[in-house]
Every structure is written in structure tokens, then in C-alpha cells.
Length: 372
View 1 (tube, one colour):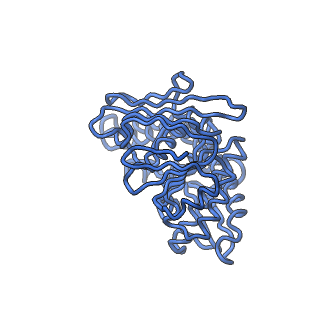
View 2 (view 1 turned 60 degrees about the vertical axis):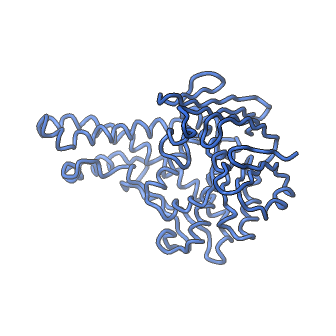
View 3 (view 1 turned 30 degrees about the vertical axis):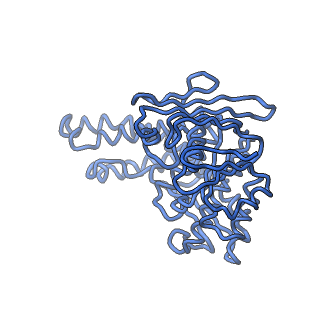
């Protein structure tokens, strides 16, 4: 899949933009704060329904405006055109259209695959388990629409169970009634949580295979990076339902005391190791940064091979954290994965990227000037 046209209205610092994109890779070059990353953010929105930076859609609206429009035309193999539009107007719910038909975020994930690279990816290694779960859930949803639906239903079941654990709820209906109200959600959590546990175990296994392959020689004799799944509930065999049900029952007293559900897939983690040691605890900052980059490369490879469609690769200021050799190796790897959109303020890379046949677009104050 490739992006052939991007259209923005009142998005970040772009009042209006119509940007045709020729076949091939694209470089957005400009100073800090000029709007390069905003272009990548718009493409990410088209592929996931959300920003990779902001946690609220309202933050994407140009200052003083009441909404935004992001639209694009893409082409699949065989030149089949796909048109996507995302609208946010006057504080109403975000609207998504694919080929002019109403759609949902899950439809975007099923239609357009994006993988983003940025210096902040180091949080995949250094950050909390929540960051890594979010990564696994995005990847799982890119590979399977069913994964996203199960995840949403599971999260709703946990919220409903948590409601029955609050002191206000127990005080209002009484403890016996609260337990009775909780039972259906216990069953729902076991049913859906078991599916998630199995799916994530498989997903981490697929990532592990790719990570070991692409990092074999990357860490100067320390060996490849490995990925290990650490589920919120351990189990033996193929079916985790009994283990999850038992763990949920055993934690009931603790859950009632603190008012929320403490066991289940929502406490899963992904552990990255180098030379048998947790990269989060023992890796240098450079090793952690490279580990995160290779994790994203594994995501891109998995999407391409499992879905059969090359993702759009969004690369934001990676040259600021990679030395020359690492940056050239990174470029060589991503060039085979999909169409690249690379944003940088590093003018020194212009000649190299022209040699690699990147189309060059200069970005200044929310305007884009394309060379040639």
C-alpha cells in the first residue's frame, strides 16, 4: 500500500494543505517546530484513528479553530484507490469515512497499516508495562480485527467488574448484592481474558523470532535481543481459563479492599532481554534505544509478512539519536518494509537521502514546498 495524496484542514499548524506524493519514499526537511512531525501524526491518525503523541483529539485542532479534517488517497496493489477521511467538528464525536462510507477506528486498522519510529520509542523499553501492552495491542489489532474487538470487550468487562468493587456501590446495594452483580463480569473476564492471553503469547512468540533474527549482530557480541511474555496470570497447557478463574477468585479480597481488579491480561508485560538480562534494568540508554527500534522493525516485518501488505513507515528524527553507521543500517532495513515518510532537521542527510531516491519536501511554518 502507498499514500498518494494527503489533505489537511485546521490540523495542528496547517490551516490547509494539499500534498501530492509521488511513488517512492519521502523526506520532510525543516527546523524544529515547523510542522514536520505533524505530517507524520496525520498519517498515523489515518492508520489507527489516534495520534502517536496526543491523548485527546482536541489537541490536534489548529489554534482558534473548532475542528479539523484529515483526508488521504491511497493505492493498493493493482492500483485500487482507497479514500479515507477523518473529521472532528464543533466538539462532536470524531467521524471516519472510508470510500465515503461511515467507518470505525477498527476499520482503519484493518485497511491501513502504519508503523512509527521516534526517539520517544525508548519508553517501550524503559517505561511501564502499560506502554508495552499498548504496543502489543496495536500490533494485535493490526493483524486481526477480532483481536481489537476482544480487547474492547475485555476492557469493558473489567470496568464493569470494577464498578461492583467500589465502596459506593457495595454500600448502596449491600455486599451480597454486589457479589451477585459481579459474577457475570467474572465469567466474562475469564472468557475474554483467556483469548487475550493466548493471542498475546502467540504474538510475543512471533516478535521473538523476528527480533532474534535482526539483532543477531547488532550489539557487539552480546547476542540478539529476545522477547519474553510475562502474563498477568500464569498457566500450563493450552487453555488458561481455569488458571484465570482461580486467580480472579483468590484476589477477590484484595480487589474489594482497593476497589479494582488486580489480575488478568491488563497486567501483562513484555520483557526484552540482552545477554539474558532485562534490557530495562541493565541496558545502557543506547542499547535501550536500539532495542526499541528493533522492536518496531519487528512490528513492520510482522505486519508485512502476516497481512501481505507493506505498512507506511513514519520515521521522526531518528538521525538525532543514531550514529552514522546505525542510521545507515536502519535505513537499509526499513527501505524493504514499505513506503517511508521521514522527518528530520538534519540537513547533513539531504545528499544521502537524495541518493536513495527520497522525494524532498521542505517544511516551514505549516507550509510544504516540494522539490522537483
